[in-house]
Image (cartoon, rainbow, N blue to C red):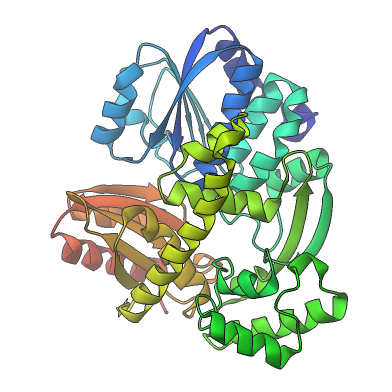
Length: 443
């Protein structure tokens, strides 16, 4: 039972929130636009449908106070459930009370009359042990234990937020141990035929192989492995040989231990929805990154007509992202305490920064991506557990550096984002370097 996992305090506030929801006839859901947020929204909408409550889903793309308030006030007269965001945005809607927040990000506590349920307020590490989908799933379980069948979308969110690297921990692990009823296979973290799996692999990203089919062909021939074999069909010896050679390929780029850990993992087979955990994460996150969030939501709410487009979008996303990663890596600027690049699309800055930081450079400095394709500059930053363990907190870096440049930012210690006015990158970088220097004395 979820009560036994959560304890009295967290369970009681979730229960109160579910009771408030059950008393409504119409609810608006505001979800962050990324893979974790979209996974969270699928969970919440499925719950609302089972309660026979009408709903409207909107995505949060602008997290600054003005942008968030504008979005919220489109339907401020009804109950809003805000998921995978919201705690830091409460000051923007402090004069409202008809909202429920399900969040896991760092934030500064503010007096409010709504219901703010943030994992961190209950001693849960929102970077490693709970994501937006975790919060949505425990909300669903508090509403009714029969919602445990929404487990696949909890896992999709966990994977989208990279909280599965090195194995689950904390609340995520407790939920997994209690509610996972699916077959698990420990294998390489790849999908499809071996040739396509490596060619289109972005998590992990194999610098020099990913995006280069001819190089992949040579690599597999020298390994004695049939490129047309499906990853799930290779035998133990082939799995070991391929894994070792891919690990050596990754180490050529001086990557950290987290990158190597992500080379293999537990793959779950969700027979009831027809996808593995790896495939489901790729579908939801891939569609989210090319602004097609609605397709996986429609499909997993029962509209099978969008299935082919939804699946095809994954390869479109990966092809585009692979190109952007190589371009950004070639133009990567190096400073004493950070690295940075300019991204062609705002929705891609995070995945590009994440891939570069995790798979193509030493884990000693965070990677920051600027996007200048909009009126303001959107920024994404990614660090490593190595740097976080030595004091790095990108939430604080982004908060201070964005503020110094006339914007706003925040997030997690290992991954954060923000927005600043155009032309203020220099001020941002100066402050970011200073803050990182104060957090990590020697890099």
